[in-house]
Amino acid sequence: MAIKHEKDAPAAQEPGPFQRFRESIRRNPILNTAWRVGVFTVGLTVLVGGLVMMVTPGPGIVAIVLGLAILATEFAWAQRALHRAKAAAERAKEKALDPRKKRRNAILGVVGGLLVGAAVIAYLVVYDFTLPWNVEDPSFWN
Image (cartoon, rainbow, N blue to C red):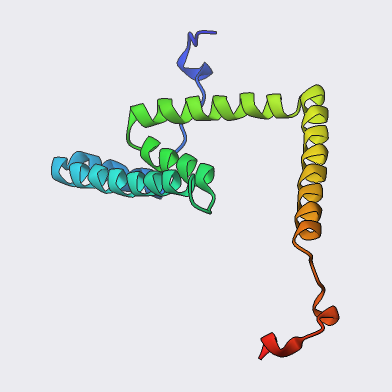
């Protein structure tokens, strides 16, 4: 729907303190470049930290999305990447909530747990597991 009259246009909101601050920085090319370098550095650090956390313990996905969100405040390519990441997350959520796949994953989890339990019990039987209170010669404890 096109707006034909100025009175039909929505009222422009007054910019908040952060928007005014950012506009004052944008007016100065050196400050603008320094700001963008700072945003790039912080965003890239969080993004790389998220990538590292994908193979080490930690919330890797959250850090990656947060890094992209920081970068998206200044860079259009990061906005596009963040949009694609959000779309992929939405597709994964829909796929995970599919009842057939949910049931299949539950069955596979139970069967896998039973197999691991059976393997642990077999290992303990083969290698003669003895409870600590049934040890006949406790001299090796000293």
